[in-house]
Length: 198
Image (cartoon, rainbow, N blue to C red; front, side, top):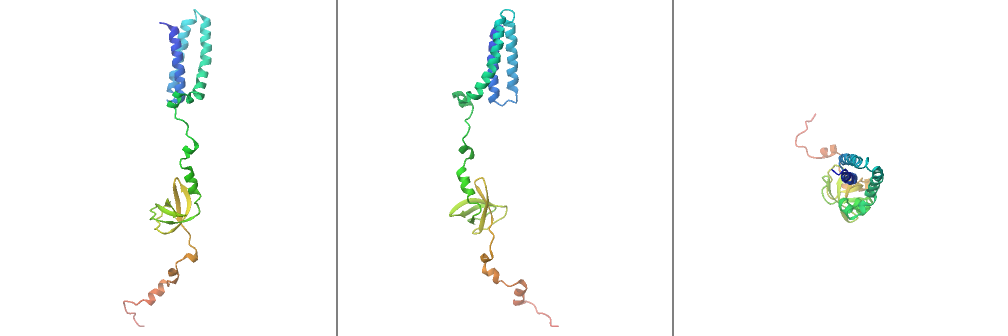
């Protein structure tokens, strides 16, 4: 058995496993395999060169101490930019790709505080018309009828969050103001029974 060949081969496998450990999640399993291969490489090198060529042995040890950190540094800094690295590792998305609809989100946030009119029944989601723009929206868990004034209070994803707009006294329907109290309306209506005379 050629221990020198085993030592070099096991060292090469060790370096590849260390690189794989960086990019492949394995819960430390690949690292354990790399350490076992490194131990086998050192033992084989000791068997091959310790008695016959101590200088080669120490050269091997120095090479191990240099190759392992150099390989790890290359893997972290340069390997992702290589052709193989780009195939294995997906490129980091840009800020625009991460935010997705960034401009749309900013546009929706600019509508917060404005008053719109519901176009459909909100149960609780539906559509609202704001600045002549029909947008998707949802209420805060309550049902809102169509053609009701609502206020935009927040943005969740690509959807507006609305609530019923507060009505001022001037906006109160005149018919509601002219309605008599309940007791008066009953008094003015014709009763369907005779009131006993005292």
